[in-house]
Image (cartoon, each protein chain N blue to C red):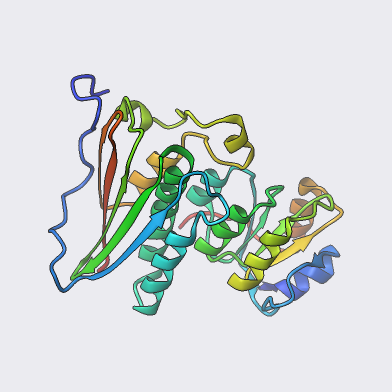
Length: 118
Length: 160
């Protein structure tokens, strides 16, 4: 069963920070890491990425890997430039009150698989 | 470790032919220390490859390698350029900077080794994964560096 960004938002109670996102996009996997080079090496296309990194380079990494969304845990607010860039690139950015651990558990319970390189 | 020639290490893969005059080319300037524009050169290269309908797996490898190189230029160099040339079966990206050069290239290619500052590490970079990530995602890679002069890297990707 495929989970869309819309379903992810509703089920996890996320707040969407980028208006232009395509909410019908499939969330193909989940991943949680704050080291950008690590994410670049291990991340996959279509994944939802949970990170505390709020600067523009997080959006660059999400765009280069064609991720479905970026989720900031614990109400972390991104820098305004980051949101502008994300909107430009069509990357959905969400914020959540939950911490990263709780978010991972909820996503897993929804049936979102862990990101694994083919 | 290649202690005899600290400014280079053995190339990875078979070197692609030099791009011809008919190659599709893009050149990007990358400024030192400017994290706000970091990633723009890689994004532009990625867009060009998408427009041409290149295989998504190849685009992914090119994106990772070119972004790591771009970030290296921002973090470590005095500024430089990234030149892309697409010709026949090969995409070549050459990065050149104007210094400061890498004292021991073999060491720089070692996973986990980094000279990045604390500030850079807080941004999620500088884990010593950059150059190994580049090599892993290329079909050809070589790096030549001279301390006090600069570093040149050549990356080749088979696009077929």
